[in-house]
Image 1 (cartoon, rainbow, N blue to C red):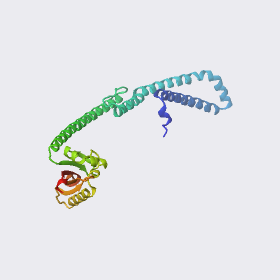
Image 2 (image 1 turned 180 degrees about the vertical axis):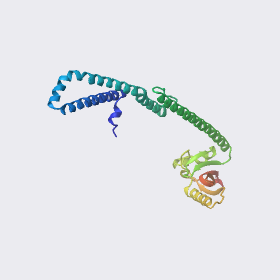
Image 3 (image 1 turned 90 degrees about the horizontal axis):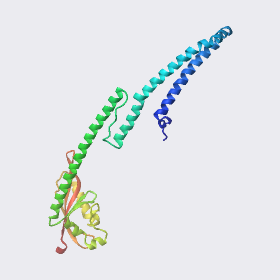
Image 4 (image 1 turned 45 degrees about the vertical axis):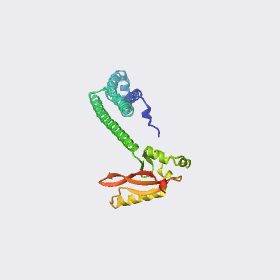
Length: 273
């Protein structure tokens, strides 16, 4: 979509177009009025006016010059104290919102323009203060989350069995070293089932038992029945058998618990079978 023609003109060009237009209109009205009045005179009156032409013309002409000078002065003041400051203020406001939140508008122009610039600067200060507070909260929350994650990772590393945390889609979100050693054996990797963050747990463990356990948990939550954990047995893509305990990860939404993921505890029982 093309911009209107006026948007491509600078304030100086608009100023001169405005002045030339006003001057043209003033002289056109004066000349048109004089011509129309002259044509409505009788021939005898036209002869008299022609004789007085040199005495009558200078005064309207001088008056027109004074009127044009006055209008040009007023238009110049209008552009200097209102139009140009508004345009600059718009550019500086766009700079604050799009590129540099710390930039502030330089007040200029009429008193009303200075007041408007002060209001915009105060709003920018308030917005930046709020943004800094939000950034600080996000930073602190990130640090707290990182600390909790490190604590959880340290705790999981001490567990005697493997632990894998997944979302509802089965994507691995977290796991400990024991689970990594258990699931990333050479025969499993040959089948393309290596465990990793963001990868699917269904590529490592049999899908059907896990899906069935999730369906049971979902049904239990729909019936408001507590299912703290489910035990099942599955095998890797290779030949090893794993005892799996599945525990739900829940969210509280509007006072109602919903399933958001699951935690698997893994124990190798191949030697028991």
